[in-house]
Length: 162
Image (cartoon, rainbow, N blue to C red; front, side):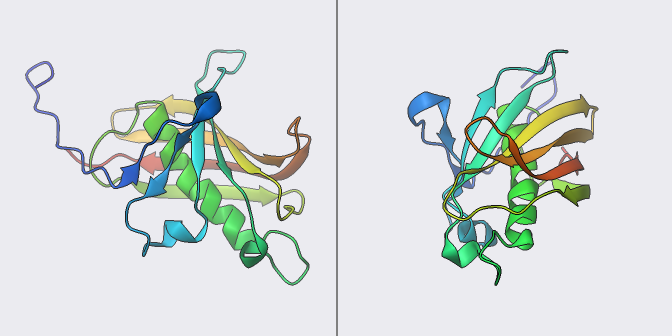
């Protein structure tokens, strides 16, 4: 109970093992689901933006199976990473804690090609949260200093009904 309102029971479908460097695993317990195609995934909370907005980083390491015929990361893999990252980051921000939320919209702009074998990170920023919606934006980047931008995005999640 919270302020007289009963919280819905969380159906936790993800492993959340703490790893080195503040990283947490973000993998489905059911390996037959779509997410498993791009797992293993990890997530960690980053320093807030200069204006104080929460920020998180969701990482995958693309393999040959994630590549297109040009030997770059397939665009569909990058899009899947972004969609999953919206939820992984929102959980880290404590914005999602129960039920089945859904992506309402996702806008993306491909900027460069993703490189196979190198960490591919979705850096997600919380723009605004309301009672039912979470507005997020970010970049998919590679390189030690995030200098290789692969994609920019903005998305909205609708929280599950209580």
